[in-house]
Image (cartoon, rainbow, N blue to C red; front, top):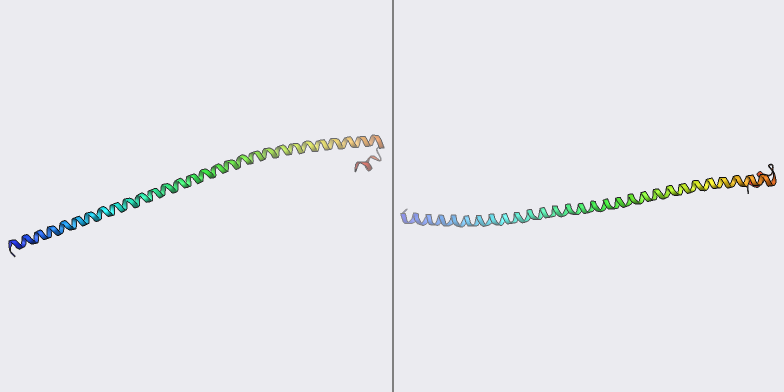
Length: 118
C-alpha cells in the first residue's frame, strides 16, 4: 500500500467517522428532545390530575360543611318542636284536670267518670 492510498483510506475513515458522529449527534439531540417532551407531558398530566383531585376534595369538603350546617339547624328545630310538644302535653294535662274538676263540681264525683271519656 502506497502513501497515497493510505492517505485516501485515512480521509475516507475520517469522513466516515465525521458522518457517523454527525448522525449520532443528531440522533442524540432528537432523542433528548423527545425525552424532554415526554417528561414535560408527564409532569403536566401529574399536575393537572393533582389539581383536579384537590378541587374535587375542596368541593366535597364544602358539601360536607353544608350538610353539617343543615344537620345542626335541623337538630335545633327538632329540639324546639320537642319543647313545644312537651308544653302542649303539659297544657293538655292541665286542661284535662280542669275538665275533670269542673265535671266533678257540676255532676258530682260518681258521675264525672262517665263524662270524662267525652
